[in-house]
Image (tube, rainbow, N blue to C red):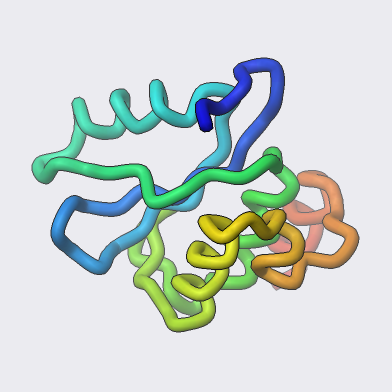
Length: 116
């Protein structure tokens, strides 16, 4: 199924043939985002999966996996992360796959980061 550009998606990208790092990002057009990332990457990249979700969900996942951050929006994979990705591939929503409850706003995230 092809993403509908009228929606927002959280996507997971990684280097081909490697376990990670995994980029967690969001876009209306995740495959175009993949192409942009490949222009800047020294290694070929592949889309692992994508699911409906926007900036708030992306930031919630960045917080959830903060301990695994490699750099910027790239994270080292964990069994929990890979399990969530597999759940999305199996038809689960982003919220179901990663146990995301009500997601705060980006402003909430910045306020929490400033307090840390």
